[in-house]
Structure formats: C-alpha cells, structure tokens
Image (cartoon, rainbow, N blue to C red):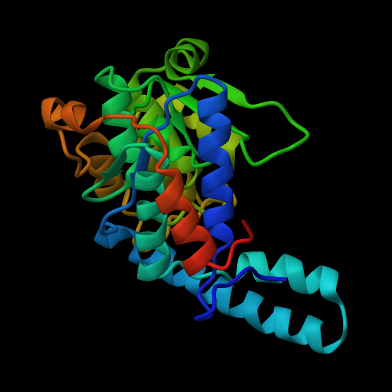
Length: 276
C-alpha cells in the first residue's frame, strides 16, 4: 500500500529520508543532502525512456491489482513513482527540520557531490549512481538500501591504479560502458570496452579501429556505432560539469542543528498523515 497524505500526495519518500538521516546521525555521520537541479539537455532522452518505463510500470500495477496480485502490484508501484515538485519541497523541508544541511545543485547532484568531496568538504558521495566516480568523487558509498548486504566503499584512486588508467581514460571507459548522455556501441560490453580503452587509450582511437574492422570485407561487421554517439559531449559533461564551485560559500551553509521536534511532529503528523 502506498503511503499518502490527506491530499493524496505520496509520503513514502519522507519515511526513507527521515529514518536514513537519523541512522546517519546515530552512527556519527553528518549527512549533507544534495538535490538535483535542471538536467543537462543530453540527459533528456534518458529521462524520456525512464518516463516511458514508469508509465508501463503503472499499467502493470493496475493490471496486477485488478487480478488481486498484490505482491506484483507493490513491486510495480515502486517502479512507477514520479517525483513531483511537492515531493521535492517536502523532502527539503524535512531536511531542514531534522537539522541536516541541504544543497541544491545547479545540475546533476552527483557532480556537485563529487566537487564537494574532492574539495574536502565531505568524505564520500553516497549514491547508487556510478557516475559519481566518473565525475571524480574520491570515494563512493553504495548499498545503503540493502538490509542484507554491507555498504560498499569504492576508492577512485584505487580503481585508477588497479586499472592502470588515467582519469581521462577512465571517463572514456565509462562512456563506452554506457552513461545517461549517449547510446552504446552495439556489440561492445564492459569487458570489451575495458580491453579496447587499455589498447587504444581514447574513444577516437577505438572508433578508428572499429572503422578499419568494419571496412575489412574479410571480417564480419560486429560493432555498430550509433548515429548519434555523443561521446565528446558526454566527456565534456564529466570533465566540466555544471556545479557550484564556490566552496567557501557552501562551507558556510554546512551547519548541523538539533532537530526541531515540535515542528517535525506538526509537519509529519498533522500535515503528512504520520502516526505520532
């Protein structure tokens, strides 16, 4: 069953944010919540695809409910949730009432997190999105949503040393493996992408090798380069992301306060339908 307030607005995200913030604080972690800004134009196609997937999940949820299959309905409900402006505003207010600082990124939240971590304002970026590493975060923490598996800490420096790659080569590898800003080259998976970047160093060189392979009439054409393989634009987004780089100003805003219990109860119980 989806959690909603009296006006029909979803509130499940507030439950997660509320308990996650408390979990961090109880374990001596001072969280900084960073919210996405306007997505880059290159991401629009990916967002359209996600929107289509959510619509299909909504249809599947309705069909499952009609058939009495509540387990499938619950699963599809989670996949069909659309983030509204009201949900975002509620989440930001909850952060404030819990006493945790909140940063609004001009564009991608992971990019903003990465520059804050590399500037020493935070230890790590906590997200499931691997793009945080491509944006240059020193450490990535994943797995907070799992109750069975431990949290995984990934060190960018150790990845580059282990792969024996420069950051530039690593970014090209990530683009080859697939990112939100471009299509993949057909016939190339992560292992092949890794080997090609190790051998050729850049995507430009990889494309030349693919061209030579495909033009060789004695060989079978097995790699399909999409018509709009936007690797240069994607690379530029990772190297020069749209972020707030005024670290002094951001540092001034990083203040952790005691939770406002009275206003928290008023907001969650009176306005959002939580039990006391």
